[in-house]
Amino acid sequence: MREGSLDAPTRHVIDWTNPDYIDTEKLDAELRRQFDICHGCRRCFNLCDSFPRLFDLIDAAEDDELEGVKSADFKHVVDACTLCDMCFLTKCPYVPPHEFNIDFPHLMLRYRAAEHAESGTPFFDKQLTETDRNGKLAGLAPGLANWGTKRGNALTRSAMEKIAGVHRDAELPKFHGTPFEERAKHSPPATNHEAPAFGRKAVIFATCFANYNNPGIGEAALSVLAKNGVETEVSYPGCCGMPQLEQGDLARVADQARTIAAKLRPYIEQKKDIVAVVPSCALMMKFEWPLIVPDDENVQALARATYDITEYIVDIAGKEGMAAGLAPLPGGVALHLACHARAQNMGPKGAEMLRLIPETDITVVERCSGHGGSWGIKKDNFEVATKFARQTVRKAANADKLYLASECPLAGKHLAQGFENLDGPAQKTVQALHPIQILAKAYGLTEHE
Image (spheres, rainbow, N blue to C red):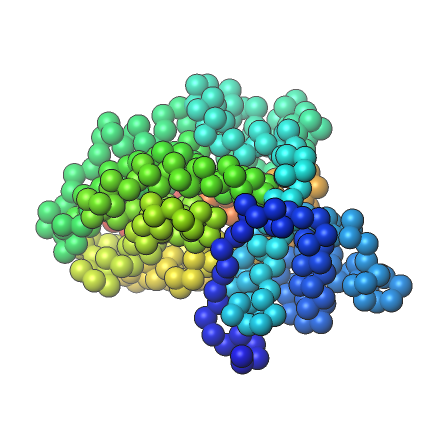
């Protein structure tokens, strides 16, 4: 074994059905084993708040060693992890196949699974994770829902903070009355038969966010694929389970994986590619689901057939070539590379895609947004999330581009909010777009400003 894990990182199957997985003593022993190695390395000190919290606990112990830290204090470390996977993929020299066998994010997941097995998901946290139910209910009266969740609404947001623990200043997603899946059925764009990639067939996995919160992302993806000759339809069997994964509810994630994979399997048998428009969902389908339900062939087949939308466009560009019509975007783009896009280990596909636009300056911002799904909107986390986003926002602002984009819509929303807190002439109000919306604009297919 070579020092530094010079081989490609691998991940073990998540053995969550084994009683040992949530056994208190065995979990504590593994926490201490991995934490002790982290303590001796400390390379990840600046990635997120989990590592400073861990190292501070050790440094404050009487013996300056992990032995002096109480096991009950580990929860403070676990609660700071956003499951971004960046320590595993970009920093840690001891990931498998290295003999030290360090996988910090999946260790945090194991701790949360043990918590969930003991006491379940806290009530209000569970309500936040019910994205499909929330989207459907809010869609019945989106104006009222958006009024109630609007930042600055002193009446409702203070109540949400006290009751549900959602920070009153956190920008929350908006809701729409007609889901993206329904919109796609009513007015699908015509497929361009003259495009070099004509003949490809794909299914857009709508994702809960594009379906209920930002249909514009899905519509942009649909229009760009049609422009490039891809015969495309939209399917949304349900949420990928990332919100439940964050809470350690692995049984719920496994059920979603099996159900959705079974419903999408007929498309795969018809030789259609599956394209997810949000990177967290692509990550779940490509990497997490196969580790949680490794014995399900539908899940394995779906993992092999799934693309992130930016990855798929770059694949078209490399194999067949893009359809004509891309025009320069004066002012350029500051592109934030989202953690769950980077965690797919596919390269900076968002940047590669936007660089297909002629004569357009693309500045890449490869730093943490601080958001972490529902983590960053919590009362206990929002200030930390804002702190970690500060330098990312500053770098994006210093790029002085007309457009701000992020592959993760929630990260983009958090970064856009951060622009409001800048001092001096850089302060401005911005709208963060998904890269596929930027590409659609370059094709003249949408009118986002």
